[in-house]
Image 1 (cartoon, rainbow, N blue to C red):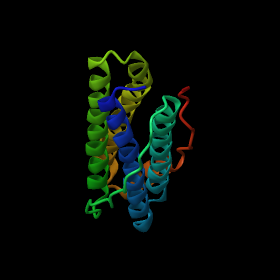
Image 2: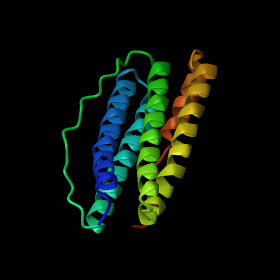
Image 3: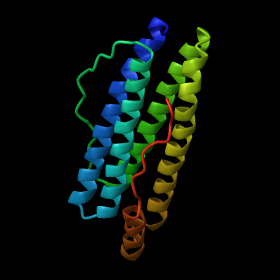
Length: 170
């Protein structure tokens, strides 16, 4: 059995990951509506990844005999009307998720829950990659987003992203 506080934080993270998926799906819809199907693809895949993250947390809880309680998923509340700002919202959100993962890790460390810490190691690494990807997208948009030909090429790059499920073994 997991420490009560650790289990509570893990359970909350399930909901947060589903919210992330919902947020990124909203971003995908925005980009599709303004004709940037590559960016829409990128965020649709991002939504799939976040859903899979939620499922990994859920499975971890179940593997440890913990009750999972699903909460309501909040409606995304970002004003999506600027292609660069949406990317900045993405980075802001990834930084929030990183802090949530760190909070769980800290709680697990405080009760010497090494198994949960090991489980979270993958997410700590993943969040580093997520923040880097978000930062790179912002830099590219700042450099090329105002030029139609360059934006077309950047959009084509984003369209090339393919989905691959996380390779975390529970």
